[in-house]
Image 1 (cartoon, rainbow, N blue to C red):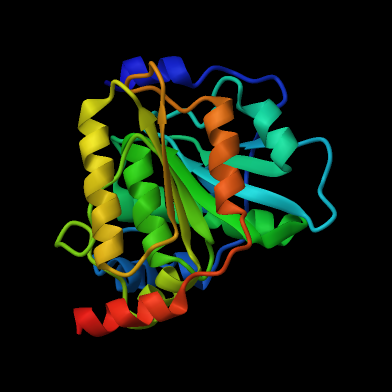
Image 2 (image 1 turned 60 degrees about the vertical axis):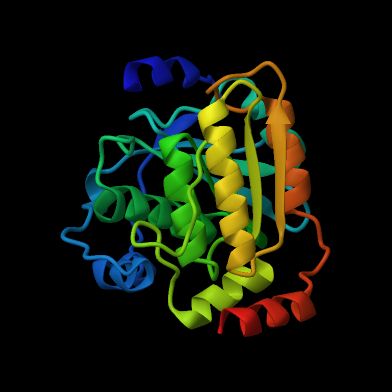
Length: 262
């Protein structure tokens, strides 16, 4: 599976490999464990880690958007065709190397994604209202969990051909204050291929679960003629058009849902 997925991560000349140095309490094992309701057994040595970075040539007036991408493969390369969409959107792309499906989730994939976002928000002019986490396949499942646990850092998620329900032992909801923030300001964009029947079912289950937990800012799109393949640049653009909409959440609907949950 991993070998096949490497086909979707070709080299892009404009990308570069970088290192980061800034740590953060948000990425500390104890804090990840608190938010994920999990036991975190290790931490990453950031000095040894490498990240793939793509920066559009023109920065929007309010600052760049940011997409922290969690791949299912061990290469963090920018997917084919995406640079043109990232340029139009004014969105920086970053992904950790060696953060694929074979790596541990809360001990490695999660802190690497968090540290990528934190370092770029320190070193670049980033619009905090346009900071998102995303992924493909197994990476999308990790991105969904990060968006749920860190709504104070990420404004939402781009979920490509991989999603799960929340609120069970595998994907528990975070502490109440973070869940409220996730309900009120996070946005979720799901995409999957027309012929990817497994992830069509998984996506519908995830969306229904989000609604059960009072998260209604959800958008989905089926990509015609595609199977279990990474999203096209056009689908990425449409997803970001939704993610960056300024329409507020329906707080009355959310409060009614919370009452029903209680």
